Length: 487
Image 1 (cartoon, one colour):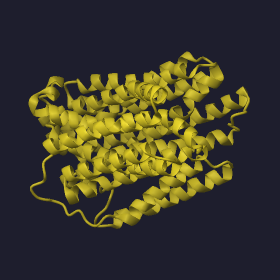
Image 2 (cartoon, rainbow, N blue to C red):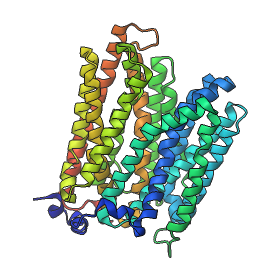
Image 3 (cartoon, rainbow, N blue to C red):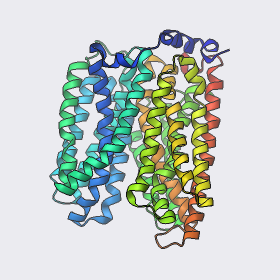
Image 4 (cartoon, helix red, strand yellow):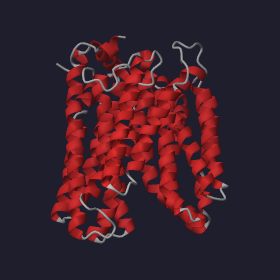
């Protein structure tokens, strides 16, 4: 018996999707503007990430603020997560259109502030505002996908967004590098402004104001937002701690802050998180664990793979960076194939294989470091990208489906926020692991190999946990609808 047949709620959703849409429908007159709007919202985040990571070192060199370089990324990440957590509340309070316009203006203000900066404090302020604006934009754009498109086209929208990410991985560093080298790092920052202007125009044209608010927004949950931001900040700080015990203390403090914030949120009548979030008894809860753990495991490669290829196999920056582009290409290509499958129920049954293939890819990276065979790196990266491509869009859509209408916005906005949190937590956890095994700039090849083996082995364990939660999600979805679903 299929997932759709066993769960009445999912069955209803699936029946609507059996007449699957075509890719060409995204380009038709009634969907083209909405497609461009949501993809542009994703592009603001994706291209900005690659633009800034390429141009920022030159800005730091000009201002002489090397010690503050990591803070430019940390503040952006912290406030992006705060913005994502705030997105559903603001959408309910002011409507999607007003929220997106305001967030885009905040992002634009941050971009202009950083572009015109005369020192690192202005750059940091700009990055903070960019993070806050982009976090809200990403959350609201996710929430708008099931509102602007019929169910049969939702998989195609996630496939289109995967194409945007792959394009950003290729074109972002190239465009930013050319602008920085032949013009100025400020041009690489400022190039976001025309995109913001187009995005705002599309939002005004496409996103309507709600006729009525079905859910009370409640007051802005400032203490809980601060708590979540503080937790991410502690995690980011732990990654820069020089001593192992300091790093461990900061990570434990972050864990305690998260536990208290989540418990407080569950007791609140106006919660940030959807009901049943991270519960082991609901498909929504276990599914959210998958959303957190997959990027957490993949962060091992994001942080250490390029460095290890340069140090262990003498790859140049371009050749080493190709491995990241290879992962992005694999993700996009697989996402397009999966989104083209005719059966939504079959895509759901495939979900658990994504974390499994991710795990196999990380095993490949572990074996590459252990054996010295660099070709396993490229095979592993292809597998990692394919793992995300198989499951990410389907899982996101599935979690939106099992949420109640009243809490769908919370779930949707939480997805990109959890992804960012996973990368942040992973970077800190793998940093602590590498440092514990003696990782350092001057470390010998043997010490470096041992450290990276420990990092990728831990990533494999985390990926195995994501497989467990993915299987649990499918198992729970076959049972009677959860309490969260029935509310």
